[in-house]
Image: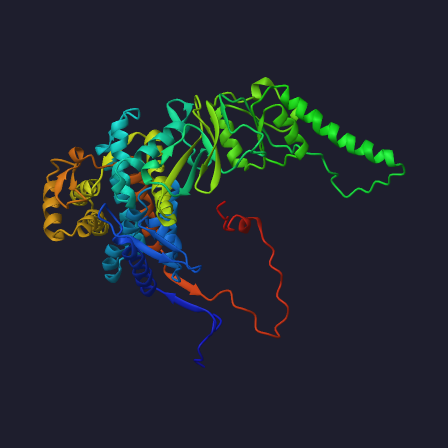
Amino acid sequence: MNAPVLVLKDSLKRESGTKVHHGNIQASKAVADIIRTTLGPRSMLKMLLDAGGGIVVTNDGNAILRELDVAHPAAKSMIELSRTQDEEVGDGTTSVIVLAGEMLHVAEAFIEKSYHPTVICRAYIKALEDAIAVLDKIAMTIDVNDRATVLGLVKSCIGTKFTSQFGDLIADLAIDATTTVGVDLGQGLREVDIKKYIKVEKVPGGQLEDSKVLKGVMFNKDVVAPGKMKRKIVNPRIILLDCPLEYKKGENQTNAELVREEDWEVLLKLEEEYIETICVQILKFKPDLVITEKGLSDLACHYFSKAGVSAIRRLRKTDNNRIAKACGAVIVNRPDEIQESDVGTGAGLFEVKKIGDDFFAFVVDCKEPKACTVLLRGPSKDLLNEMERNLQDAMSVSRNIIKNPKLVPGGGATELTVSATLKQKSATIEGIEKWPYEAAAIAFEAIPRTLAQNCGVNVIRTMTALQGKHANGENAWIGIDGNTGAISDMKESKIWDAYNVKAQTFKTAIEAACMLLRIDDIVSGIKKKQAPGAGPSKPTIETEGDADNEQILPD
């Protein structure tokens, strides 16, 4: 009678209840432990070997986790966190993981006491709302145009990165680049599109100090006929095309039968005349530089060099857009539609230089460039890659400041203030939610604690001293100086964080912790290979919903 009832197939593995919670929490803590040592200015670097044998040396939380292959589903969603953080605000990728790991760690005790996960989550969400309120209270607004303040901010954000040893170099580059491409949307809003209009060119060789932000663009191309065309033009008139300057071939294969010999010459003449008309249409506007995204035939090249016009062919579309933004030209699709207003006159200099082994074309000294290129030089490829990652972070930070000019103290001071305020508030909360709420308050201390650990100071003493200073709420700006581990006033040390980076960190961490706590069942092994001999499987039809889930490869 009492034969066991099999509901699930043998191939399925099902874990449920507290076992899952513990598993998830362990996995998240493991992820947090991997990158815990990379928080703060005294951080360690991680060296990752990928399958191809390439090396990545970095301490950017996101870059490390991106390279990891993890098996545990909870760990995977932790890694998603740092990616979201990187895409949203570009900084705080390490803090978000450490914080989420800590939030789950303090929840473990409650799950053992068989608290219901939703109770813990409710308390956490409440703590999050209060934490954001505290942030609003201690944030201070700054003037975006005051370069020294912004510089201090960007410096403290990338002070934790490897390139901080090169002083203000990266910070300067980032601020220059972002202020160049900022676009006013009106109503005091500014939009900065880092991805489209800031190109980072890494050229190995030279010294780090040679890196600079160009007032314009550079791209890896030479003029079509180097001997005949000018390689340096002052105040060039630039025409940008995205059509080929060669004879149009038929769309499909065409066979023409010629009866008379002369007809062949007529055909050739037609091709030549076609190209000549195009060139004449372009030369009417007296350009000094013609750039096209497509091909450029020898004949067209000849006409251009005869007229003393330099030409560049097969340029990337993205580069062409940047040039258009930099010199104020409009990209034209058909040569017969060019107008005077399409000619770019904003550039001060066109020049082709040889850097290393390659020729690079520069369109620089633009009047009001809305796009720019950051030229990075350095001894090795690994170093350049790390510099680029740090520069991305720095640019994101200065973009955040331009968009939302509010600062909160860095160095763990914000977290301590939040923690102290939440501890006081927890006394007023009634019912069972009080304890998880208080635990969330303690979890915020993970950031200053990790900072202290990475400096190698006595963690317990430092933390107690800091908690004492914050408990009576006298100065919200007291935190840890990440370099020395001393307790100091963040305002004087100029250690700041952008408000929306902090807010985003808190939100992402707590919401993710709640999500992982709510999981109480893991059923694995759902997609099994079919046993041989079992009938043909149905073809799976991709629905609209699945189409979006495909991982889009970064270009």
